[in-house]
Length: 154
Image (cartoon, rainbow, N blue to C red; front, side, top):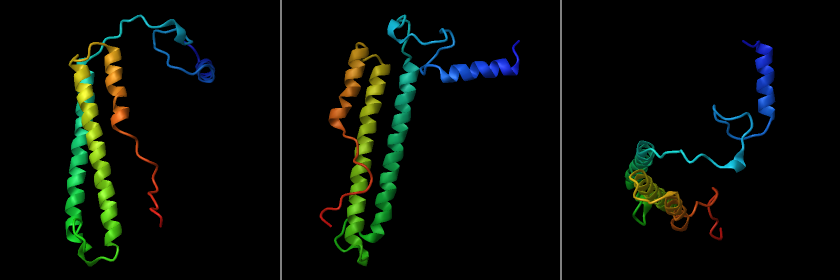
């Protein structure tokens, strides 16, 4: 049994050393260039759980979209009048941008959920096919621009 001071010194040495993941059965220093043993197995349950989580997020987004639409009805979200509010044009623009954004996020969640489910059901033949399916998302969905909006010449 080691003393607290010895354990503390050991932790400080490890923390100041090389960064990287170290498994419980691995040596003190990771050996990244060696490759793995090839014994890693995919779990259908893990893929299904991840797909379910993304599906729940998609459901939450749809709920938010419904709530957003409901809250706009009294202000004339779809009308030109805006319910008599002076800032109706800005409100309509804001509503439209959030609706478009949330629909896009919902679509992306659906695509990710589908790919996760397929990976779990082994519909893809190998790791490269799975990687290709996820890499294909970049062509379908672009990340949003930084927050701050567009001035549109104002």
